[in-house]
Image 1 (spheres, rainbow, N blue to C red):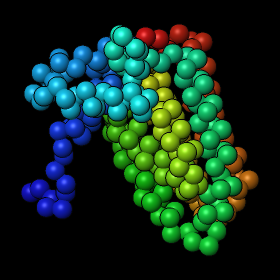
Image 2 (image 1 turned 120 degrees about the horizontal axis):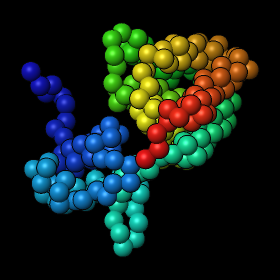
Image 3 (image 1 turned 135 degrees about the vertical axis):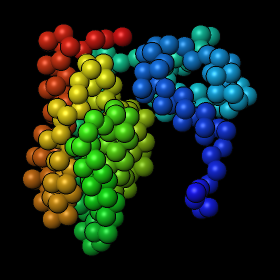
Image 4 (image 1 turned 135 degrees about the horizontal axis):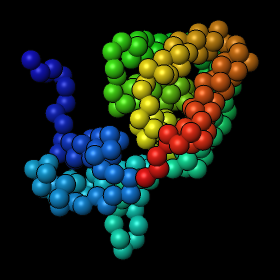
Length: 229
């Protein structure tokens, strides 16, 4: 039975979510032109919401708009992923002090982080999809940065695909997510340290947490497991 409180999805939202999913799961190859009419025909909707969705995805960093040529699914390679992960590292470490200051007298905002941290348990059982793992990771880290109450920092973090770049790397390397279960378990430790106000230990663990995919990126590149588009 449908949830009567659930808002019906609009055609614009449907187009946006569907095209975004296809970019993230590789249905649209990196650098592939997003053909509005072809996508509209496939989704069985008019061209207008597809155009709106593609423009939105370009503004959010999932696609690249080239004047006089069109909009293309974003390309990733070793350098772009490395740079994004370094940016992610800087933003998350920078946000720690502001987050701790904002929750000093009211720790209730941390509750959402506990909820997201508990979602990682489902990734330890079975074979999670890249998209589901990425969805949970985005929920956690976007909420973490959001606690800094700096909207511009959060906007840059999201638009740079700071979390998504990691999963592009995993997918490009055909790497089983079972290899990063230890990193999934670290999220509960991050929340505990945030709750205790231990900024130094939190900084140490968060630095390690983000350094892991950076090290993995280098290893995948050196061993030829990272196939660039």
